[in-house]
Image 1: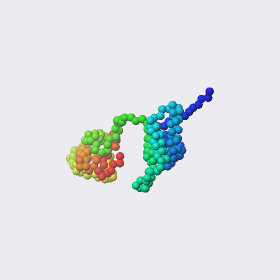
Image 2: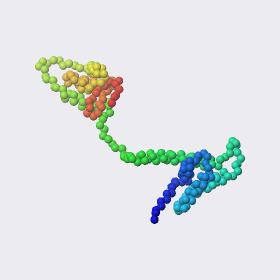
Image 3: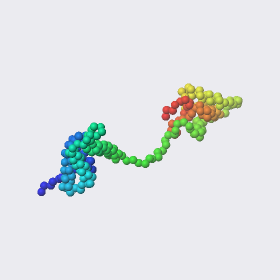
Image 4: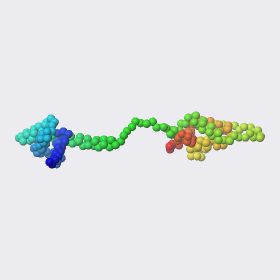
Length: 241
């Protein structure tokens, strides 16, 4: 015995069935042949009953609405309104169909977007370790440690055979020296380059001069990341990190 397969279209509601009939028959929404549309709509409902498919009340309400519009179209035309135009009984139905089509298109777009998002999995934010220090505004502790590093690589001066009067250094003069080095280095000087020469006392005065320039906001110190080189920069220089 040969098997038969019967396919019944499923519709989300009466408006979905109307849109199916309009698109299937390529009907102009603004000029609906209400008699033909009503006939095909009722035929679909009869097909549902034939296969024992339960018909929702909303489908029956739409069928009654179509029959009412059809009967109004067959009655004598009423008098014209104030604007001199005849009221078309199909206008309300056309407006509902256009609104439904608009929401149908939007729901299709949202469905596509949801399908794309289903391919991605989100997770809670994670705390990542910080590998870089913010440029500039280094703490005094880091500067002191950098200065001790500079002193540790300097060779201790041997005691001279002849005693001489120790040379005095002023913070003001060392401030001028640092600014001079910055000018020759285009406003950016490696921290260790400011302490290349001089006795221990002179280096200490130079470090104090650097702190004074920072206090006056004439220069700033920068470090791109942890354990990287420290630079002395003039305030006018723009950061390029």
